[in-house]
Image 1 (cartoon, rainbow, N blue to C red):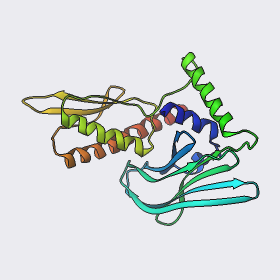
Image 2 (image 1 turned 180 degrees about the horizontal axis):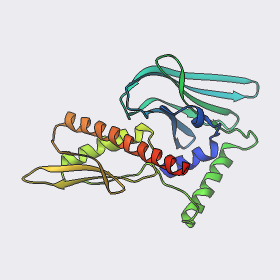
Image 3 (image 1 turned 90 degrees about the vertical axis):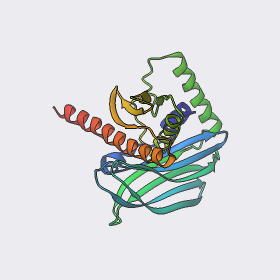
Length: 252
């Protein structure tokens, strides 16, 4: 399903260069989950700075059928800690092959300045039915399965190697908020638990064999949830540093 979602976005999204103007400090991201003829839309935000941010968002779904159009919006205020990602709002729509659908996520800062923006367009070619678009996606999936050299990169993968109930609980908390954060990294994130002295175990979050975050496990659920949130912020900062290093290398 994740593979299908990723390709669906590639087929339906329109890149207008927003990432070059917006999304520098606060990144807006629209995530989709396609099941049968229904599309679940989730708006997410990621704080790419080392400062707290007070923000507001508006997630809109605009349908055009001929000369008629309708707009449904959800809005609200929220805050983000440094390097924190958060799910803002979720809605489900029926994919109508007669309607052009525009999904727009806008994020404003405390001064009401637009800082984050993402946009998806579905069924832009009205002469092509949703069924045909779905068939195209399936054909692409078949090509991916038959050819490993098509350049596809699987994103958002989290693996685990846990040994105790506390470790499994942490992994469940962490993997859930990681998916909701919108980070969607091409790097595989590995969560593992190691036995330490006595009965203690140490939980580590790794990327490229680098330990991004680690702590000693405790069975308390609130503690594990807090550690999952801390680990996600540390991971977000680590991935952003990798991107900054890439940009620096490219300049030279």
